[in-house]
Length: 224
Image: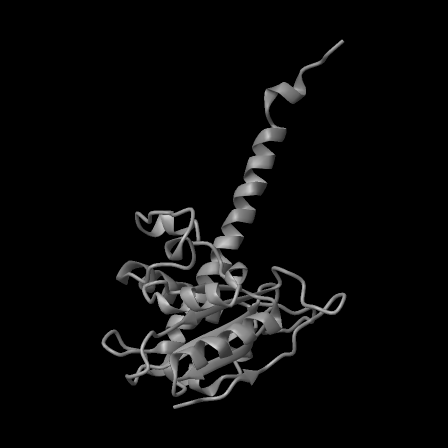
C-alpha cells in the first residue's frame, strides 16, 4: 500500500527553480492512519497539459503521506488544489509553513454550485468535494482526454491527450470507473483539472474585460 513516487517529466527550471504557475497539482487526501482508501496526487504542466508526476499510496502514518505530497509540490513549485473535506492536510501544511503552496478555492465553482468563499482558514483553500463538483471534475477529465495534445509538430491525425498518460494505474481506473466505486486517482486528476479550468476562465474573463474597456465610447471621443 505504500506506493512510490513516479516522475514522468523532470521540472522545467529557470534560475534554478520551476517558474511559479507553470505546474499545478490535484490531491485526494485522507486523514486517518487506519483504513484502505489510498491518497493520490498528480502534478501537471499547465501549458502542455501533460501529467508530469504522480504519487498514489497509503504509508503507515498519514503524516508520511502528507510529507511526500508536500515535497512533490515543492519539487515542482506547484499550486495544489485539494479536497478540503479532509482537514488534516491543511493543518500539516500550516505546521510546515507551506500554506502558500495551497491554491485558493477556484472561483469557477460559483458556476457549478452555490459555493461560499472564505478569506482565511481551511475553507479558503481547496474545494468541497460535493457530488455536483465531483461530477463536474469528471466531465473536465473526459474532455481533456479527448482534446488534441499540445505539440509544435503537425500530424495528419493529431493524437489526443489520452495518449500522453504514462500512468497504467490511472488508465485502468479510467477504464473501470463506475458510479459506485472509489477511484482515488480519478478524484485527484479531477482536482488538478478543476484548478486548470479556473485559470483558463480567469484569463478569458480578463481578456473580455479589456476588450470591453477598449470599446468604451470614452476612448473614441476627441479632446482638444
